[in-house]
Image: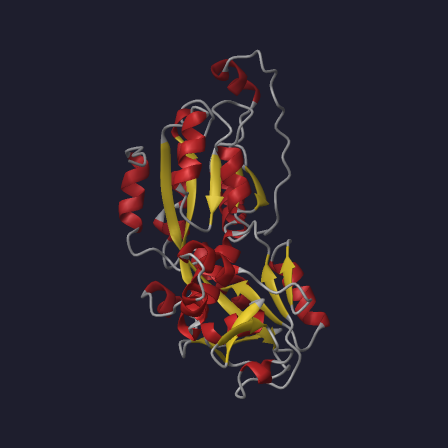
Length: 345
């Protein structure tokens, strides 16, 4: 299979055409969203096109937030049918959807992915990290000698003597990706709390919300680099910088073990087992969201959702697991929910 983004060829109907009529002009399911879910969705879309009588769905990336924004633009042939997301849809997004007439949304959890911290296979010995180390390496301000100060650290060894004596060079996902959000919440924020920095900021007069925002900030002096593209761009940065450490999804790392080595987080190694059991601290469920109003109008939409979550596809022995997805132990419940077209309450 080719793990590539499929190019959209669907035409946009004139605004004056009704949805039911306009749907005749589009017979392909249209999907957009998370770059983490993208390789899984591309595998499924290609297999769906090859194994059913429906056309191959159009799968685009752009990030979770971008995909959900497009999903919530309204109902109709000129709007997407499915949004991929590496996080749950937010209340404000559900509200935005409702304001535009998207009131019936089917949530589909496809499995789990884990955030890993990887570096050049033959590079410095980055083998074990903690959230506190990452907070102290990347935060604009840190707690030092009881005071909140501008980050003085230039090398990992200055952050913690157990880390390699090399310049800090972290390549992290850009803000539009769900990967960035889980990195912020489960690494930067946890590290900020555990280091005592958040409490110190609040003791200094900051509100809890402002302190949390400060905890999620990253330095802008070049030590931390946002990657707006997908993991292949992060890998390219690691390839060209032997001291670099990148944030990747487990699936991507497992497909590049010839180039990368992975570190533990809080003494737990990332694996399908530690992620499925919840032992590994930096992992998350993956979703896609289906616009129920398009079922029965856009050919193959419900069938695509059912195909995606079939045991043969998303189960432990399916192609998605081979590519790194951790199968959802509650997959059968998801299958039943799709079959019944159950919407979010």
